[in-house]
Length: 395
Image (cartoon, rainbow, N blue to C red):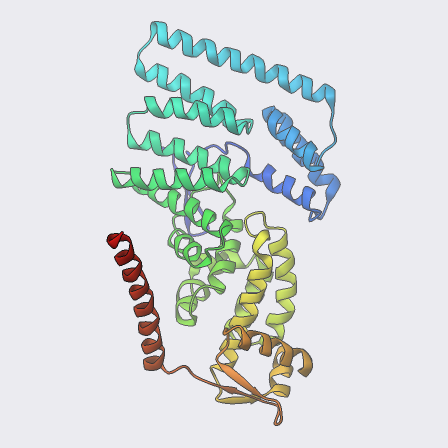
């Protein structure tokens, strides 16, 4: 086993999983294609250098189609020839293994071919090649590693179906006896998938469980990981849990020294500095828009962050004037009135506005009454299902 070194308080193994495909390139392509790149020329050069380093023909074509790069026919031909030569070499190694060597050598040759297609981000060929390698795999660990490669490919191309199928398969394999390191790796992969499908609560739970054991540098950097963890935790956790796992979390706080905007955003909410929270929310919105895993949920994130702040302030008072609430958030009274009205109508805030006196009155929900209504609702659903079942049986 390779020596281990400390990254902050996080133990990182030198024998890390190779980044196949190079996930940083997917982020660069996203930034350029979406117009969110802060330095277009530098990002285009970094993207092109990464593509050329691994002869990523399929991904190069995708980048050109997305408008991130311009087509260079000579470069494309050069990379295609290099890939064809490598595929021929790998095919010869498989044939030799099948004729002259044993099962383990055949498995290694099949896996090498699959890894090649994964490295150049040829999704279709990689899926087929990994399927052949999976059939030859013996141990649970070998099968899980193939699942991880396919999950990365799915995340690389935003193929949610490929990610989910292999997360589920890896979860099943884990029950058969996966090791501790792969168990933690799967949590991170599942957490990233949860972010893409807007399941922020599940994402926060999975990512927080791996803060002190993070080793998935093939997927994203530790700083990037902490930034995402803070964002999804802030809008998912209740205040005591947020304090315990994020605000007082030593690994997170150490990393937040470099993530100053995330720290300002987090501490403004926790310290009830709502004006600062709102101003930093505007900057955080730009961060989320540039985030490949979260950008499609930017509107939801911003809305939930506002609801969370309003709810936190209102829980402290039985009533508060619109003027003072607007002043606390650094906005106009008219804006605050409009905001609260919209969220109250949607059932997101338990309060009502007395427009005559300009007062917001909290209407704390009666737990027993809510439980009663929930029971009635579930009872109605059950009766409807019984009636439908009865109709089917009587036919």
